Amino acid sequence: MQPASPSSDSAGAPRITLAHLQAMVGRQQPIAMLTCYDHPTAQALVGAGLHILLVGDSAATTVLGENSTTAATMDFMLLITRSVRRGAPNLFVMADMPFASYPDVPTAAANALRFVQIAGADAVKLECDGRHVEIVRALSASGIVVCAHLGLLPQRAVQHGGYRAKGRTSAEADRIVQDATALAAAGAELILLEAVPDEVSRRVVAAVSCPVLGCGAGPGCHGHVVVLHDILGFNDHPPRFVDRLADGPAFIHNAAKEYVIAIQTRQYPAARHGYPTK
Image 1 (cartoon, rainbow, N blue to C red):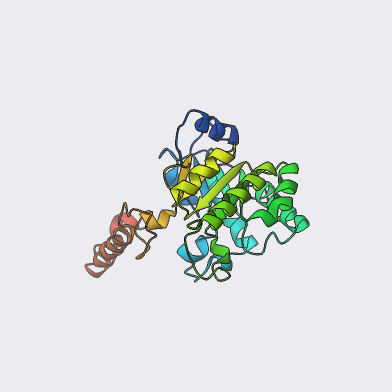
Image 2 (cartoon, one colour; image 1 turned 90 degrees about the vertical axis):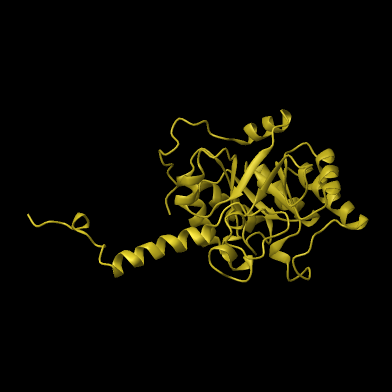
């Protein structure tokens, strides 16, 4: 693979950097973030006011139809991250480190470096806890921007007994705050909290100095992210923290239906669709 090359679709727009996100927190301006998995969607999202595109391993379930995010591989994640970067060259692109891609410091460092050098990611996200302090410290020391993902961890859903909200007991809440504090001290420049009570999010915000992003984590976070396909209506049972904002399946279905009708009524192909002989 060659390094990703930016497109010119948003030429002239200011590049959103970590410093930009930090300044937004200082101005108390909310950060808007969505998942994105491909080039044309990234292009469509440019200009919508978003700040961060998360190339999530959720692509395994939302795009590939797998039962778990653990099906996402490094090669797959690199490929789609590279495509999103080309489609949105000036947005902050965060890439998910997939399942089993960071079991130890050397492996994590090598794989994170591939996301930055090959795919053009601005940051990598790890589903982690206090046991990952040394990995976060090593990546940060290498100059890689790390987002520490705490709370509900989809990659460990089987290990944790399913997709359950976290931090709802005092012990769990304390552990999340402690882990967030330790990971931020180790060099995590961003924290993402998934499916935790707002009270826990506010405690984390108070405990760390970096931007805190929420995914179903209440209004106390500095910014918020949901899965694009959920707001587009592709999920029949979206999480409770997601509003359905469009009917994407119906839009695609109706377009395909019009195409079929055009063929059956012989309106397609018409003369304008053909190539005349010379």
